[in-house]
Length: 194
Image (cartoon, rainbow, N blue to C red; front, top):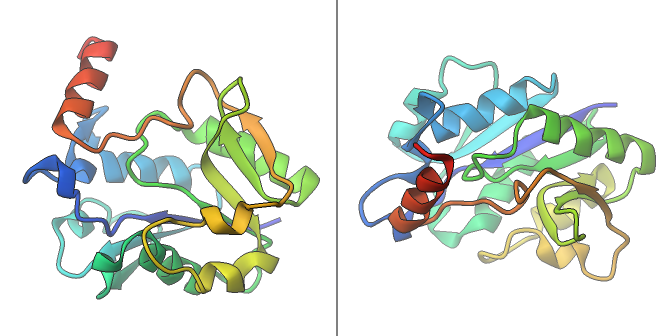
C-alpha cells in the first residue's frame, strides 16, 4: 500500500512578526527539514508545497522528496493542499496531510496512523487519548477530487464532516502542538527546558 504524504508549507507565518516558524530550530535543524525527514523515514512518497522564492527550499532541497512551488499561497491552506494532492502518484492508495508546523509528531506517530489506515481504509487521523481529532490525517485516494476542490483557509475539515473517521491516539498532545506565534515557541521551549 502506498501513501502519499503532502506537507503544506506555503503559509506566510504571519503571526510570527517577521520570523519564519518553519525555519525555527528544533533538534538542531529547521523545523521544516525535521518534519520532512520524519515523513521520508516512513518510506512513503513525500511532497512539500512551498511559496515561490523562499528560503524554505534551501533547507530541504537535498532531501529525497518532491518540492512543488505555488503562486497562490496567499489563498491559504487549501492552495497548498490542492498543489500537493495534484502531485500525488496514481499508484497511491491514501493521501496524508501533514502540517509542517507540528514539531512533536515523529516518524513512529506517522507510521501508527499509516498502519491504522491500511487496516480500515477510511479517513484516519491522529488524536489525543481523549479522542479529540488532530493531525496528521490520511484520506483514501477516492477523496482526491474533493481535496482538489478545496478553497479558503480551512484545510480539509469539510471533507471529514459526517464521515466515519478512525482515530489513532498519539502520545500526549502531539496531534495538536502547532506553534504559530513567538509566544507559542517560547512556551514550548520552556516546557521542554530548552
